Image (cartoon, rainbow over all chains, first blue to last red):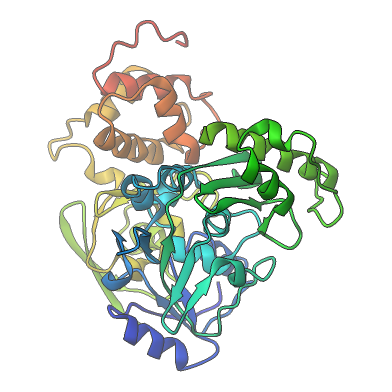
Length: 263
Length: 161
């Protein structure tokens, strides 16, 4: 790693100030992606601003509209244990990485990084979640901008994610057997006003909504409804773990499994 | 360099660290607690698992500065002060849960975290919990058996010897 200083503010206001002090300063969530990145010298911050000591952006609550509100510095293990109101989300969090990773990694860190194979982007997009930052609220539909890219500005900090709770939902992940990241993961959620299907791991553009499946499931929420749908392998990630065509096929398989699991 | 202060195995510990100093480096190089191993240094293998405030974490993927003020438990703090092994350690001994021993500190720390959460895990739950702990010698059978034995379960019917 290159040398850097590390700061651990205890308030959001102090964290915002520290990040604003220089373009070379960078936020540190649980570090389960950023620390390996730093080890490979792929990042060179002047100051890392750790967000793990800020109590005001931790914890799980419910707002007046019944949405599940998760502080950005809440770990995957805490979501797995504490998001019982939204079981599909708790299950997703409880299957990220391994137990030690889940004790450090945070929902805000995962969404800010927007790894194209991460699980949380599928949950946020598939739930139509609201991503709250220190300056604004961003709808998940407007938030993701492709692989490792989001609309977050320099120094902007995610503080909370608000999840509308669906009638039923499930997430199915086909794990890449070495990394345990999603080779393809499909998040399906049925709301009173429609069905949302979000897919991670597959597209070169990062997480995306599969609108044809949403329309078909909206009138018939069963695996049969999407039996005849297929996606093209064009624009899908193609690597030694699987071709674009293989991933496109898996999207259909994992979406059907998610619909079946949601019941 | 900033100073960090933490409690390690029940005793106060402090030292100067750089921002980039990893918790595992602080434990091994500053405190000379070399029981915590660095296997892959990429948060895959779990040889570096320690407990921070009661939670299993990979000490190679956390900065020492982030453990400032925390309670840290390493493999050196697991046995009783008189040397009596912890039940998990004793079970690894009895059931031959190690060969070369390199992964063992992390295995024991993960096992202790599992049993704190789930005192009588099934075999499947043990295997699932050890997803982030890699052993290249044993094939895992005796590790799983040792952890189930440490939880007080009858392991005589588990196939692997």
